[in-house]
Length: 407
Image (cartoon, rainbow, N blue to C red; front, side, top):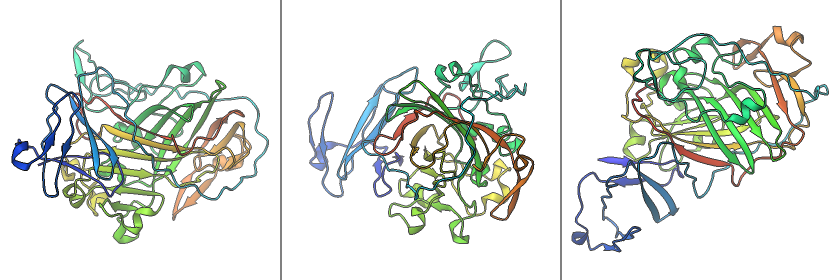
């Protein structure tokens, strides 16, 4: 049995049987045309085939209606938007005292590492899943990085890199390179490019912190830039008090917490739920973004003891999916913090006076772990508006030729 799952509310699923169904045997009412309607009675099933197309997309209309769209071959992914977006929880606004920032942007792109992948593709830059290999032939890199950075980022003087002082560790762009994902969209009239590190496999679920970068071009044409580490919650299983909680049709109280990674285990898949949802800690820091990141279909099943063998891929349980459908829910609140212009902050969001500030050579202890501080450039344009619900979510399915796990 094949299930088609999309990141809608956890109380809904769509199941499509892989066997042919004779409509008349079930007494179904059909209007055969380019757009058809079928009515099912309780206990009935329905097979839908996207004949000649490349993908069957599902959109929830109401609690009892679902629209299926057959899409044809296309060179680039077609964004699809959910009818409703689940807002990221808004914490109580707080203000962080800070020195008046210098009203100029100073963001120096990190140097190229020179490292390349199996097809000769750069390890520190965006690349498509298929590139021209050393022999001049098409070569499958085995993974994809989502959307290519839009031209307006480079026009503003920035370079989108996967390698730099913002990394949580060198392994983030070595063993975990495939988890570097880009998402370009327009929310509330603001052009946005999110670069996050997240993937539905043990290597990424085993870590609390992951790097992120966000560029936003507001209606005035000004480009703002944020970077740091986002908190995805305690990487232990929920049974041990952690934030890795299996998804269910009926959400558990634990799934209402933030931060959290709502993972897919064997029971989730059996219930038709194949989307892993990552929600960052809201308001950490208050001058940056709250966001949720959904991955459909999840590439591996979650197991409570997976952290111990995360680097051994032979212990992973693949689902057969590539995680190439993703949804971004993002919110930035202008009223939370008055800081604007160029400033410097640690990876955890602590604003400092500059790169020579003593905090930049100090350490920060979080959740019993001591980290060396890294100070990062930020820039928030005075014209940057609030981005919030409604209209702050987008969903896309990316081409995945030759893509395998990890992706």
